[in-house]
Amino acid sequence: MGVSVTPLSDTLGAEIGGVDLSDIIDDSIMGEIEDAFFDHSVVLFRDQDLTPERHISFSRRFGPLEIHVSKQYLLPGHQEILVLSNERNSDGSRVSIADGGTGWHSDLSYMERPAMGSLLYAVDTPDEPGI
Image 1 (cartoon, rainbow, N blue to C red):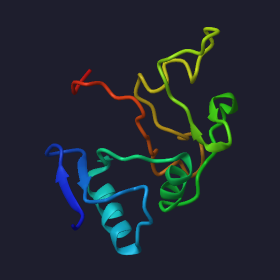
Image 2 (image 1 turned 90 degrees about the vertical axis):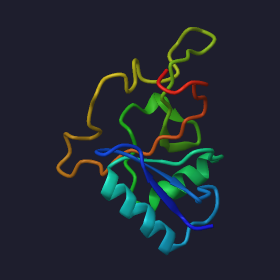
Image 3 (image 1 turned 90 degrees about the horizontal axis):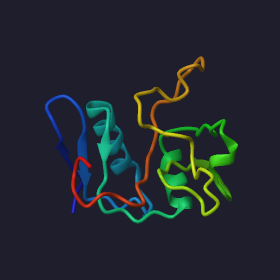
Image 4 (image 1 turned 180 degrees about the vertical axis):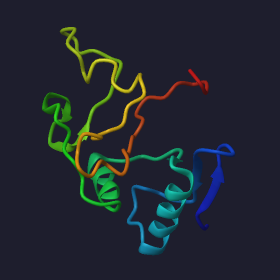
């Protein structure tokens, strides 16, 4: 099965199908993924099962990774991954940055060459869209 790209709206976003991100992705498929990203600005891959190592490996296909400045919220053993969560630890402390991502922002916009983008991997998603 080949790669499919389905626009999510007339202006922004596309769903990419036919790709298993936990597998090795050849250069031609990666080219299709990059084209979709540049054409639609946001891409979505449903039903993926990624280990932290595969998440990092796929992310590196887009270029060098930046390590987030909030070191206390990096995934232990995988400093390339910043944990974003609305949950708390059993002692009440935050699992991640307070209100991480609830307001619009641009990652690393203070740098001379800001980030191309961010790759998010949802571990626990709502049962209904838009919630």
